[in-house]
Image 1 (cartoon, one colour):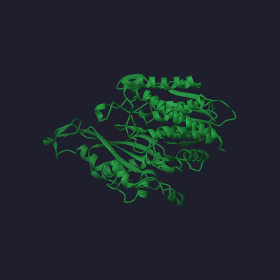
Image 2 (image 1 turned 30 degrees about the vertical axis):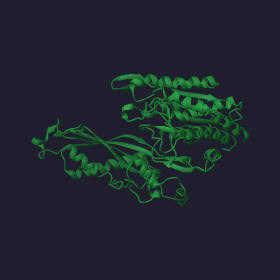
Image 3 (image 1 turned 90 degrees about the horizontal axis):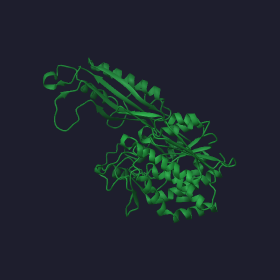
Image 4 (image 1 turned 180 degrees about the horizontal axis):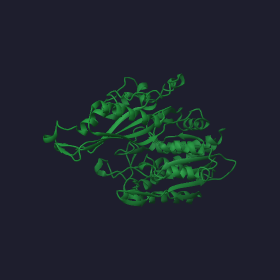
Length: 475
């Protein structure tokens, strides 16, 4: 693979130009959750399309439809589909990424303007979207541009799907993937997504599993209006009291889910899985440092990872309708809505999860003897995803990682969800790989989001090496 070495050399030579390209992309404040920034999100998509078309790619701009936000109807940002290379003798790799970002304000606590990329002395490239997901999305573009500059053909046909609503629920994307499965995406051999992170900060990884998420609203409604606690306290059933008591019946302080039957569907642990935890770059000391306080439940790293990856968890997120401002207010809220989610794992069925949760809450509410009205509302039921790390797609990525970093990658699962992973797998019937560029401490969604210069530049090498390995792998 001498050509790969030539590619690596050219990537090293172009490091500063690649950083300037990232700076240009970060400067476009493509915040999908802010209506006022919608034109910037569209501008980011158009910027990407123009760069790929200048390279020679064929692009298709797909309009997902409209969105109503706070009474205002606006267009959703376009999904940019593309194809670079159509050689029938080559394999075809489809890559996915998103060009929208989370909100960010200097007043949130950023060290610098979040939409001005700043390179720190320690190698951090700080800016909103630097790691999530503009760095990786640009990685594919710069990979293709560098091959062309070197006079090298890409070893595969490359298709891409870049959306502008990932940070706001990916509205409209599933319908486009379903519609294009036998159209634009026809002929895809494998899918690669770079939109997650290493387990630690030093060792790269490949990700082959994600948990699903089922989200619930628990509503308790009582009197027709808020009441004065001095007049009505102790004389009426209070919705907030009922809600707090019910939430306490969902999970204990050690993370154990209290819903009967919820663990019955969880796939049993195997010897092979048990061995997969050996040698991973993960420590409680590093985790406690990231958390700024040691609040870790479990006594050993292996158990902690299992509860992040392969066991279900339930988290309580907040209460709507209750007093939450500063100061004191002696009100009894008339209606409150608690919000919680349950992360699911193989082999849990979201419909069965919703059934068990609803049955449990109905049972516990009946025990209260309250005259209030209780409702359980499931707002989302996304399924888990799991893939074998022994698939040729993963073996190709593993070989590429070893070539770039000199180590075998950790094989990891993640506690979060990337729904598009499952959408691609189910509609295209091909293997999907998660190949992260950024590190665990990048702070995606947080203040001072960054990608390390090392991860960005080596990541561009990795994406290219992966394409070369896929080209030589029997699928």
